[in-house]
Structure formats: C-alpha cells, structure tokens
Image (tube, rainbow over all chains, first blue to last red; front, side, top):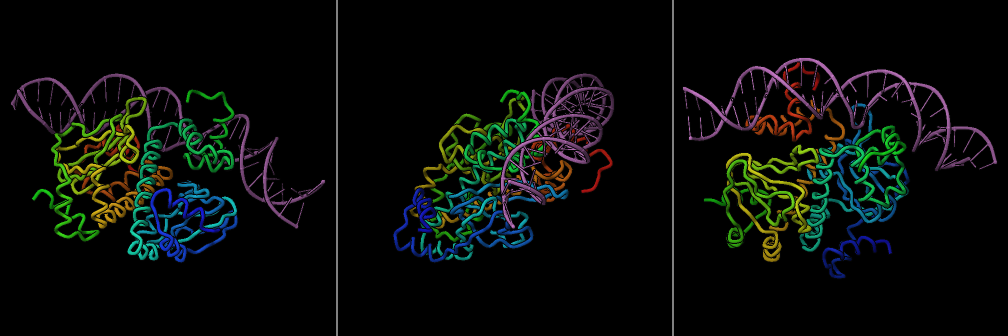
Length: 194
Length: 194
DNA sequence: CGTAGAACTTAACCTGCATTAATTTATCCG
DNA sequence: CGGATAAATTAATGCAGGTTAAGTTCTACG
C-alpha cells in the first residue's frame, strides 16, 4: 500500500488508532517527481510538508555567483521542507528538486494544523521530528564552523554510508561546503589524518 | 513575579489556564549564574532545558586547537539547550556558560515529558519553538555555506541589533565563524559592498 | 585612582580552498 | 551501439581569511 512507509515511520514514535491513520491519509496528496525536476523554486511559497516515499530529493540555495549549496538530502522515509517559508508563508529562499525519480506524499500546512486538533499524537510526532532535526542542524553547524573539509567529508561518510554510494560526488561536495574540484583533489591525494 | 517573562512568552503562542500555569511553575527550578561560569560543560549529560529570565548565555563547541565556536546566544526571554544531549541523554558536545550575570529557569526533560500528558498546549508550544529554531538553524547554515564573512557580519547586525551593542566583538567573530583579528581588520578598513 | 588582565588593533606572512580551464571518463538515451 | 551531455580529474594560479606576534586600549575591581 502507498502509505505504509509513512504510517510505519509515525508508528515508531507515536501510536495512532486506525481511525486516526485513515483521517491522516485522507489529508495526504500523492505526487511523482521526475529526476531533475523541481518541487519548489526559490521565491514560491512552500505550503506543503513533504514525505519521501521513494527516490531522493534535495533542498539547496543558490548564491550570487550561481553556485548551489545543498542543505539537506531526503532519501526514502525522510521529510523535507523549507521551514522558513512554511511557517511564515513567505517566499522560499531554497529550492527543492528530485535527485532521482521520486514518489512523494504531500501534507498541506493548513491541513496539518487542522489534524493537530483531532489527533494530538500527530502533534507529538511532529514535535519529536522538529526537535531531532534541530539537534542535527546544530551539530552540522558546529561541524561547519570547526572542522576542515577532510573532516567534514569523513563525517558525512560515517553518517550517511548509503548516500555516499549512490550520490554523484559533486552533490556531496556541495553538502559539505567545498567545490567538486577540491573534493576530487582530496580523494585522489595521499590523504592526511582523519 | 519571577515567572512572568516565561508565562508571557508562552502566552504569545498558546493559551494555558491558570491551573496549568501553576503546574508548570511548580516543575521549574530557579538558578542564578555568575558571568563566565558554566551551566554545562562538554561531556556532561544536559538534562535541563533552560529559559533565560535575565542576563545572557551562550552555547559553544571547542575544536581540536582550543578555539571556541559559538552556536547560539540566549539573551533574556530565549531558550537554550544542547538538543543532542537532551534527546539522547548522551554526553554533550557543547558548553553553555553565562556571558553576563544571569537568572535562569530550568525545566528537567523528564518533567517536561510528564507535563505533556496533562498540558497538551505545552507540547504545542514546544513544537512551535522547535520548528522556529529549526527554520533559523537552516537559514544560518545556508548563510555559512554561501556568504562571505562581511555578509555574515552584516546579517548579524540586522538580525540582532541589540546584541551587537552589548556583546564583546570577539564573541560576534566566533558566532559568524571568523577570528577576532580578521573581524577587527574588516571593521577598520574601507569596507566593500554589503 | 592604579594596575592586571581582557579585549581590541595592526601588520607581515601563510594556507586551505576557490577559480579557471583543459582533458578524460562515465552516463544517458535514441 | 554510438554520440551527446554530464561528471570527474588534473593542474596552474589566486585570494579570503588564518596565524603569529607585538603593541595598544579598555575594564574591572582592590
């Protein structure tokens, strides 16, 4: 069934009744997204929270020189959104597109707020989700401020061993904050400690 | 009253009854912290969430060379915690100390989880808090990846005009990810655009 | 007040990573 | 399979920001 992965992922954190699960599923929209096509672009208001049911998305910003900076990868089973745009209903400063052909479950922000009223456990689920995402973001920020490029690459490999296998190298470079050229050089040189 | 600022800050997001407010206050502990003294150090488990009732705290990591990297400032009215340590009950990788003499309201993580059961609105409050903090962290990460030091400084001034007035310059340097020497140079040179 | 320790400044030199550009290899798709 | 396009490599050169070190100003507090 299409919503299995979503419901299972929720069940790991909170318990919903069958009736609650059904109500939730009714609020969802399905969408397929071809590789390299956008879900959202900078400047649009992003009013959906996205669960990746299959495939892989990424969110990224584009700087003044046209260089992309990847903020997040969202493989199967992950959520992704531009929180700033979602919470304030302001134009997004990030883009989200598909790295592979993907299948998405969309939940409109306004629907979620409705659901909170009738399914308190869902609010708990998203609280837990936001707290964990915050913990991750804090750690990544600390890493960005204090580690060298080589250490950040090493971290990435440890934390996301499966992504390293499948992602084009240039995306990894963008995520850890260096150019593809420099990553290539690092990997093909007698590497130093760490 | 001591808990006015806390209750007011909660009331901006959700509504608690008087009875709920009282139950919350009963779970709180007060603590004063002298300037430059630690609330937590790296390696300890941080089991409290902290509301700053007066003064100012900061959280920061220390890298292999002994250099401090500030993750967050928490002036009066803000929350601060090491989420990783708090959620997983693992030793913290961040330090938290007082930049000024401060007065703190502490809430133990286990108490919060208890309170969620009897005060659903409190869970909503912390969901909103976590979501907003996440939005901020995402934006700061994007800035760290894509902006120059001068742009990050300019951003900081716009976003935290009051902090710029009171904070020692070296803390601002640490927050935006440069050395105090370089910040000083930037500020005393014919500055470029942005 | 005075003085000791912070905080800030200045300047010379250094380096990690960026930029550019040319070449090679991999991947997609008709 | 083959040709086009994207990804990865290599190498020369450049620069933002770091490092070190010495000097100066600020600030706390006895």
